[in-house]
Image 1 (cartoon, helix red, strand yellow):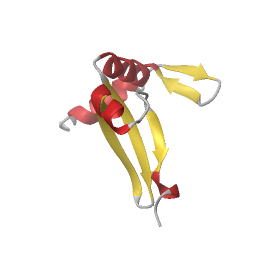
Image 2 (cartoon, rainbow, N blue to C red):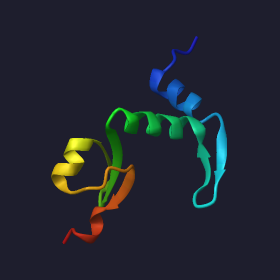
Image 3 (cartoon, rainbow, N blue to C red):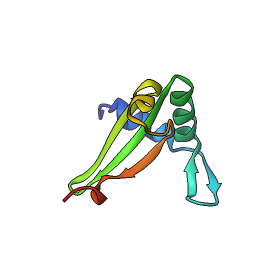
Length: 83
């Protein structure tokens, strides 16, 4: 029997049901619920796009206020500032 990878199993369950989004096509309801729950707990996910890939960061509301970032889940393109 093949052993289960807990992360892959969780990702599978998060991606099961989807809803249509005007801006982004189909969005997984599980992922949306996870992001909403994180924000209710005082955290947002920000993906920093860099020349060598994308770096996910989990930021608290306090960190966002301290650094001047919006307390929203978002993708930030850091490639514009790299030279």
